[in-house]
Image (cartoon, rainbow, N blue to C red; front, side, top):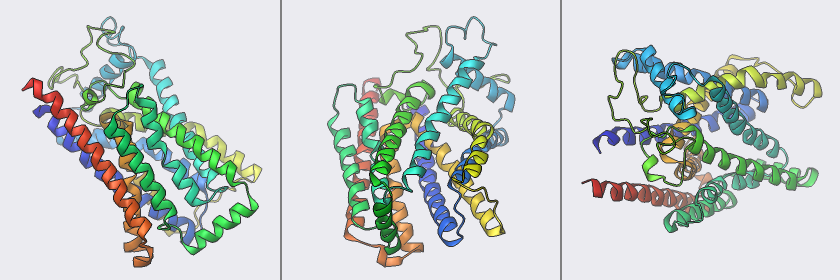
Length: 397
């Protein structure tokens, strides 16, 4: 059990960094659009998602500087892990042959899966009220649970996810995040546009985001991820039963030599996928920039001041940390705990608004009660996860 202690502690550290990064990204994005008046949502989206590409090189550099491993041995271990996962039947017959086609297909699927919900969100926010979009979007935690229960209800998880959903509704409709200007814009939208279309787009985006989380855990996360044993509802693309000669549950030190480090160090595999999504976004989605410009949907405007450029860089870097951490947590915690845990960003944004924004004027009964409910729901899920680990560990002791 000592072997799993470090990854578990690392996962909580990654979770804390992810929450902080989301708050920074949210505050900077709001500052960019309101105070600086730079409104280029697709361009900002493109820059942030393209910036994902830097995550893997930085992680590889960090491991090279702090461990005895070389970049070559770390990459060889990743190649072996991906071969075992994506093409298990060839991993022993042709270990040197990397499943390039399967990997590219996986990266393309992940890019589409993480892109289209975000784009639908950007479209919906121009049609419906901020309160409606926020509430509907955050139901992805409930949808993720419905997609993974496999006809077997778990009372604690169902209670926690339902509690978190109620908490979001209380926060959003309790008036904690709606200013007078927001309310005015919402009224104008309802009077001049089609809020029903915006709500439907948000619902589709929320369903898609929940599906992305579930499919990532099932097909993209490695079978050797430390918390997999506590999430039996996920069946991977390839398992030990499918290929009994492939060692998925390899102990620390297996193939730990000058040539290959296997299994890969914590977080390296999801960061590789994060960078691959960034490269795919950078090389493919740029085509929409001239299309949006010439159709008049979003005129392309470069930043005209250092402050705008500096703010965009901050948004991109915090977005990289948030999304990379989210990918890591999807692998080790699964979509249910990760999505509910992500709702804690509402709590932190609420607190940051009090500290850096409207002050005590931002405090409402709905905000306090809703945030407390979300924290309680996440606590129930963490307790459920740790309780399962104790039950699994008890027979071993």
